Image 1: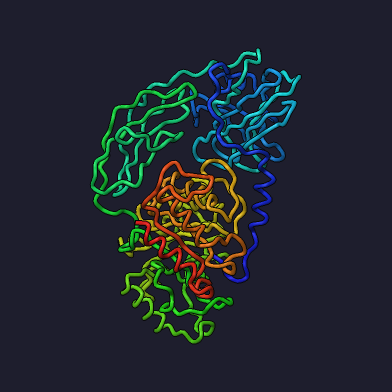
Image 2: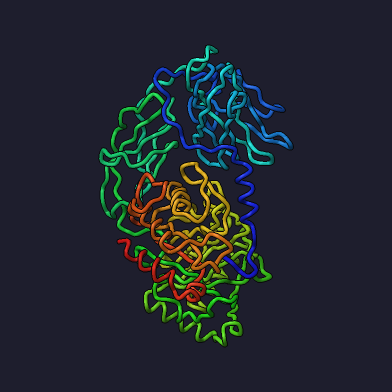
Length: 565
């Protein structure tokens, strides 16, 4: 969240994304029946046979693997990006589909020597296997191309598996075409909440993906051996089956299991409405309308007081009301206004961080200090909980410890909200995302900031730029597919053009994105594979900038959120 002056990082991030993406395409369609896989040892079952890796950077490993018993591990070091290549025989004037499964650090897949346009695609760090795919066409005299994978300088090792080059037979031989995999075994219910059932099953040899069925209807696809089916009714039994898939087709369904949702609501949030609006209240005067808490528009269900201040004690925070900057607002008035808002059914939390926030929780001692100091502020001012808006990084292990310690002190009514930047939620391996998943059972909502951002990847692997419905929906999809419950996902936008350096969109765009995610209507070019009627709602920076604009944002988005059903 902005503290004056604003930090300018969007341009640099956009430049990195733009420079890195040579060509990014959606997943190509299945190869035609007459096509063959022209790559050799694409599953690395024969070690590095047929592959050449720079500077000894490649090796084969037995874990993690996507299919079979081996995968490639490429380890960048110094000025080497761990590129592994293979020459593949092809036919002239022909179209081929290059695909592979990748995991770990930044990973690239591409082809050179096509005689036409060489192509590549990439993915940021990923904790699970992700398929990349692109197509290329050979030139009139092209009989061989070079396919490659590589990582990125100074980044973590990457893993690659099941690489293929499907198209007309180039005459050089290749791996045999896959056969339809066997039905999955070992399907079990691993956990349940009041609105979701989590499933897990055994790996199927030769499978590249899995489909999850609820009462005979396909509800989800995944590349891993676990899935969470959300938006279910409480205290209700559901039947599930799973199939395995690859390029050859889909297996028979597994034996069915029954999962029964719990009666409790799960997660934090106390008596919040099903769909809620969060607004940040500025404890400083930066040109926006100066407000008392009592003046915050009634559409806001959660009011985040921005911000707490760091102390000289590691991890500890305090709060200093800016009485002078807020026109003589007294601490007693502030406390009374919080009580009045709570009497009206609202929640008021203390926000930690902001773009200039310097709170660091990096060990057990600072985690304890954080929990103790936040709880003390809750007792002193009457706050209902805490908002985590640390924009300079966090430690997932110790932030999790801190928030669980706070929860143990405050009880089940504790509100925990988070406001990560877009880059923080691109992958479940990011520390912000890890923290959210670590505290899923006590987390109220994650309101990611869809502004002051460079271009980002959506859940479909395509790049989206801020300022559109697609940017909101395709990035929210990552959180929804990555393990957060729909009730824990909100859309964070500025209330006016003055509220952020970039990324403002009209309330209509926000409302369309909410409709797309919750109902499948008013989508842009991206349409999520599922709808999420339990989507929590929206957030804005700030109630003050909203007031400066005549409360246009909350009047439109607030009423729309509360009417989602």
